[in-house]
Image (tube, rainbow over the protein chains, first blue to last red):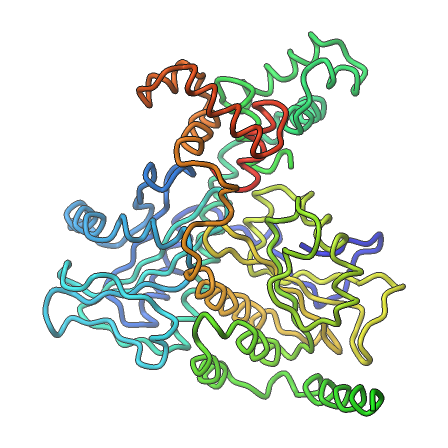
Length: 248
Length: 245
């Protein structure tokens, strides 16, 4: 949200996420995650994303990246069983980091000077303690970056630092996905115009009149856009087009 | 009398505006913030964050209420009221045009722009201002900062400030029970919307939810009435734009 005047700023102080900074693959994220893990002396990291953008009851956590290694299937299952539901519920309303204590009494995750800005998950469910940073980007790409350890004592400074970096990683992950769907280039200007007007509540006849086309042509454009967006009907196509930013 | 007050407040503002931006370390910032952590302390929290980045005035607004008129979308601000009122509609209209993906990819990234020439600003404040967005749950917020010299604001500090402002906003949202953003749609209506957005027909949804097709159509009609939309397509577009599905 910002005022957009005719003249835009071009000062050197401007920082923006430029496409040229983009990473080339998921493997580029590993070193970043490992260095975050080292910063707080954690044993493992996991990146979870929430699949489906529907109702909370229909969503679940999907493990995208981890370094649990061969223990992954067991760990992942235990983790999701313990905290999956609570984490999906949490990200719907809050940005505060989550922490939990492990099963043993000495397996704790602490942050004495930042407790007010963290929330606790139910303790003693897992063999390890940890911290989970929620990242909500919008309608897609939401999730958590989780660090686990037998014991962790986090300085407030570290939490802010890691949470900021977590957001960056989730954005990079989303940008990788975006490049895999080539629909954007494929959609023609006319198709985008028709989708936009349909999303604004216009029926085909109105769109035809507005664009100076026949109704059949409009329907053909909407049909081809639907196919390009890998959708079964125009309503799904409109939903996808908005989610991916082809129309507003 | 009036003059005295305005002078007093002016010097007060001057004092805070000239505070050097590198005065406060992140540790000191957090120490100060911890003292005011909690649902009732959004304003002091934002004030501290504004000082931390070296800006002079803050405005925290919700980006998702832009369809509504009035100033409801402004959550908290110490901008002069006239400035808020003058700019409210313009500030929000630009945002609505960007695509969802673009918005998602620009979170916590400071954006700089100019306020129009014909608005009155507090003395010493630059027309070049900074805005950054962040999400708390399904709500997207924008933090807009006025500064003496916005070029001096550091992106790292702004990112920290955005994140911590999000923490504060999380407190106040936790207080509200039901998400007010649901536009009074029922669970069933939202469920129907979700499936329609997935490309399902009324018949298919009837099958999935185990209720009759007519009931589904009634739900959808009701959604269109509540959201003031004319067609199914528009209702879905509305739901996606507002993150309801």
